[in-house]
Amino acid sequence: MDFNQLSLYVQQGNGVKVKEMVSEGLAQKVDPTALLNEGLIEAMAVIGEKFKNNEIYVPEMLMAAKAMNAGMQVLEPVLTATGVKPIGKAVIGTVKGDLHDIGKNLVRMMLKGAGIEMYDLGIDVSAQAFLSKAQEVGADMICLSALLTTTMPYMDSVIKEFEKAGVRSQFVFMIGGAPVSEAYAKSINADCYAEDAVVAVDVAKKILAGKQ
Ligand code: B1M
Image 1 (cartoon, rainbow, N blue to C red):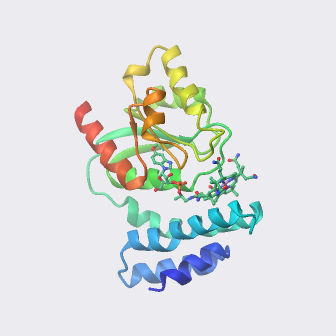
Image 2: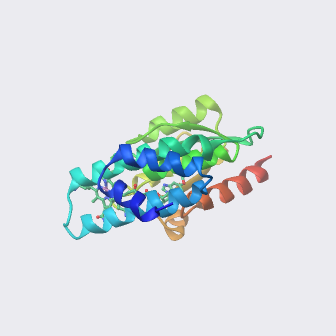
């Protein structure tokens, strides 16, 4: 598998070719994690760097994101395949003001694959929407994603909304996203931080095992 070519197709926003290459890779038994990390995620890192250096602009970034999503659609059934009984329920979303959903979708897929029942509220999600859904489905865990330094503080507002409603202690809060850190999680009284989707699975499994 030519991971370099796959990454180039994502960077060029060629969703058709990305889908084709990921499907071929899966048919040839290429490790799905390698397709994800070395092909798709690697491309987004290049795109982010180019955007920062003003070599590309928002439309190109958006096209690359669409191509990445096309590849993730093919990978989703493989990443979420699980035969196990659900080990818990989680509500996930990207916080208000933030439209980035690739990382959040990846975390959702991996947690689903680990046997957690996932309720995805999408992007630009308000504190009230997190609270209503968490109570409606009886969630164990609330998963917040933010990719912008300007939207990260809204994670604090979400936790405060739960505190105001007097239900904070009923839920475990996991937060993540590029600008987020362990120190930030501590500062807003979140229960845990995960740097990527793989770590998110480990952290969630440990916490949910402790809740039972
Ligand atoms: Co935006 N963007 N973007 N963008 N974008 C970044 C984030 C940026 C770093 C680019 C840069 O300057 N280098 C920069 C943020 C700077 C900052 O705040 N410090 C930026 C900017 C500035 C913007 C706009 C403001 C640009 C503009 O309009 N001038 C704008 C904001 C829009 C808004 O949200 N209101 C904007 C818009 C967009 C697009 C819409 C065009 C598009 C998003 C499309 C989409 O998501 N559907 C986009 C993209 C694609 C990016 C980059 C290039 C790629 C993000 C991505 O998907 N990465 C990004 C640069 C970069 O990240 N290098 C950039 C791949 C993904 C797998 O990684 O999302 O980090 P990530 O998720 C990881 C971990 O963070 C973690 O696990 C995931 C998987 O391992 N994780 C969690 C994430 N959530 C988690 C939750 C958890 C646990 C772990 O627990 C609950």
